[in-house]
Length: 335
Image 1 (spheres, rainbow, N blue to C red):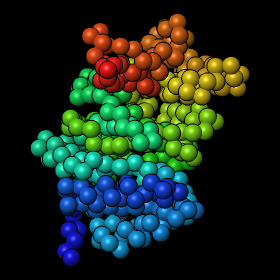
Image 2: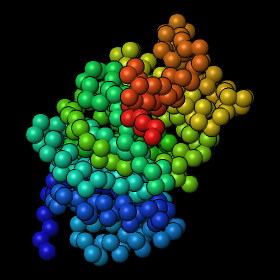
Image 3: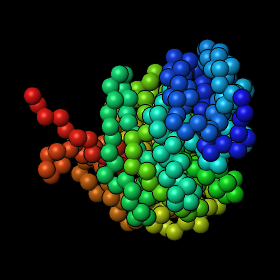
Image 4: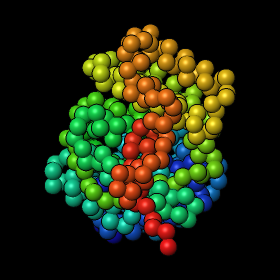
């Protein structure tokens, strides 16, 4: 079998204790309608049967390459994948998620047609056996503010030009427990990639998985503060305009408040103090007046801006605010 040493897309899959989900993940990549791909699986010291699953699949498909290493975290795993990638573009896929069959074909075609550095696409949420189609109401908008939020959300709903990542030396920060993908995305945004949009729901993101990074309240809340502290020390962040810095600070504050709401921690002195100290830190940098102007701090209910569900004006959709990003979910008529 002849293998193209310069495939169109490299799919990077960090793997850590996801043996139960890995077959569906790998099957979804192998079944892609775009054949010219490579699949780099980085086993990050899994203690379950994940490596055995990878070896089984690699024996059947030569496009699968395995990097087996001692546990060093998801950032190091993804960085190893980027370093090894031979593809023109890179896509990131978590080992417990999966792709729609035409994902890479459609998104790659968009990337090539516009010579884009990155292409953003839509996703579905998987909760158990239930699939929910999410429609971001701001999808495809090139307004700087909305594009900032599009970039700072997640990494797996985008295709990245490999040469762009390497030229700009963009990688994942080591040592962070959470929000490492936010840092990566913001680093991309800071370097002004030529961005395109592909209007399709191609990625399936699994919610509420046991032992996931977002299942631990301490890891989530303290992780947001640690990630912001890392970011604000970088030269590229310090070179950003003040209004961009404030919007990013608001994004991290939104993350803290979103976790407080999700875990029902409003009566927790410990975590409410984390929030208070974070605001004080921002006030010390930008001034109390500027921080008071952050949009969600002006709301009577501070968390409505982070998590809320409302009907659209025509009542055809549920408008859901999730970490500052608005989505539209089509309502089902009662029978």
